[in-house]
Structure formats: C-alpha cells, structure tokens
Length: 288
Image (tube, rainbow, N blue to C red):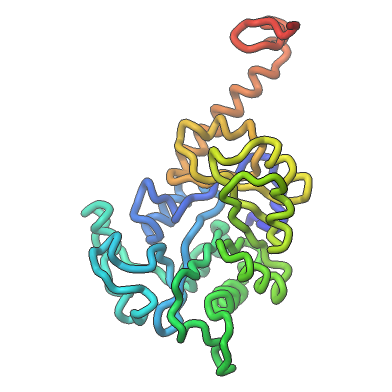
C-alpha cells in the first residue's frame, strides 16, 4: 500500500479527482470504483459534516447544483441525506447512487487504494463546531475525520487537505504523523514560505499558475508536489515541471498521457536521437 507520508516511487502518481468525475458522478461509489479500476494511485474525496455530525462525502455546501434542492447539507441529518439520488444528474445510468459516508469508504479503501480527504469547512453550522463531550467550541470536522482515519488503520494511506491552513496546523499539532496537503493557488515569490507554517508534506499547485522553478523550490524543501487543473492533453507537458503527482478527472487517460510523455522524453534522451539529430528537437542542431 502506498505510504503518502513518504511514497517510495519515481513515477508520477495519479490522483483521481472526486474519484473519477469524468467517468461517473463525483464522490459516489461508482466514481470510486471507476477511479480505482482506471489505475488511480489515490482517490481524492470531499468531506463535510451533516447536522448530526456524520462525516459524509459530498462536495457542494448546498444540494442545489446537483439536485436543484436549496437546502444546505449542514442543516440536514444523515437519515435525510442517505436516501438522496446523487447519480441521476450525471446520467440516468447512475440513478440510485447514494451519498457515501467517510467511515464506509475508509473500510473499502483499506489495503486497496490510498485516499486524499479534502476537508470542506465552508460555512459550518455553529452546532458542528462543538467538540463532542467537552461542551466547548472545538473543531468537529478535523476531529471526526482524524478519528475515523485512525480507527480504520489508514493514517499513512490518507493525506488530509484543506484550504484552511489553520485547520491543517491544528491537525499537525495533534497528529504529526498524518500526511497533510495545502493548496497553493497563485504563483508566489516564496512558495516554501507560504506552505511551511501549515506543516504540510504535500502541496497542490495549479496549472498553469506554476513553473518549474517553483516546483524545484518546493521539492528541494522536501515537499511533494501535486499538479491540478489539467486537461488530458496537458499531462505530458506537465511532466516537464517535475511534479510528484497529477490530479485527474479521468485517471486512465492521465496515466496513458503520462506514459506517452515519458516515452517521448526517453526518445529525446536516447543515444540514437543524440547521434541522429545532434541533441536538438525536430532534427535541428543544438550547437548554436
């Protein structure tokens, strides 16, 4: 099983976005199975809390974008959410897909595939910010996710990500051995300085707001770099940045594009190419 704190691999990892959102309705069992079968090394999922504190896998804060239902997820109990059809909007063939719970996905993924759990803090209900059993304000989403991950024995096979860097720092303070990932949306002069306070092991950067120099800076600081926001035709080009992983809506297509790009790079470096073409591209000499 892939250790996300220290992955021992030289190849570019493929992370299935919301399972495999191009192949099946996002964040559903159908998407998880599709992503796994397509060869994803990691499945990325979005996690938030219901009104009664259940950690569920759902991206949007309201039901409107998919179901044309104006209610907020935070205001609904698990019993109200578990029967919703979250597959029909994507394609009638997926009718009957239900919202998964994080606990169930962790059990399924154990010894099968690694996960990226993206915490959707958003606009949380005040009642969901109470630490169970303490009666004081706490951090229910992080606590709940951590508890479930550890109970499932997946602490090294799950990377926790969030836009909330304070939340990541809180997690690190409690569980320094769990891999964390921070999002770096914009190109900045000091990417390492932006990331370091969170204690993250992984950094998600976005195409095309990233360059090889920034990736090199992050990697030289011991960070693992994941590239997101790509279209299939750009994966091979992304290889030139030297990232550790790419996030893909279709993991199989990304895997094929990366393989083709790697083969092209190898051909350019081969002794035959150097002797035939002088080391340049398209037969041009590189002696200029």
